[in-house]
Image (cartoon, rainbow, N blue to C red; front, side):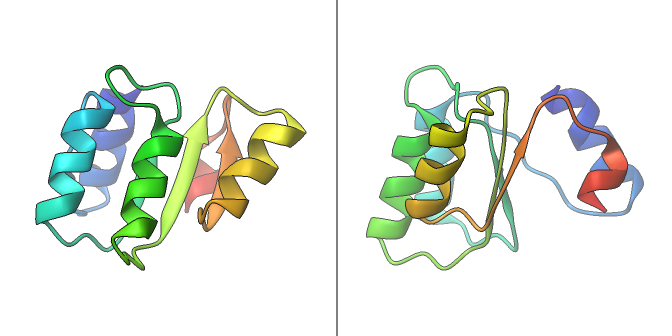
Length: 98
């Protein structure tokens, strides 16, 4: 999914950087500024919610869209309460991101 999404965003002339696990995402977010973070929750090495918690604990105000297969009500509420700006469960259509 990350490859397909990255290609679609690049085709829309956006700059994209992909981290394939939570630890790499956390490291990038600790050293770089981004206009938007699209975050999956089921990441290896560090859960996406932990990445989000660490971002917000560092004071990051970067908007975060959670894009995940974990679409239950409790998951959505938890993600939003931890500081996500929006939550989109899979499956989704690309038009929902526009």
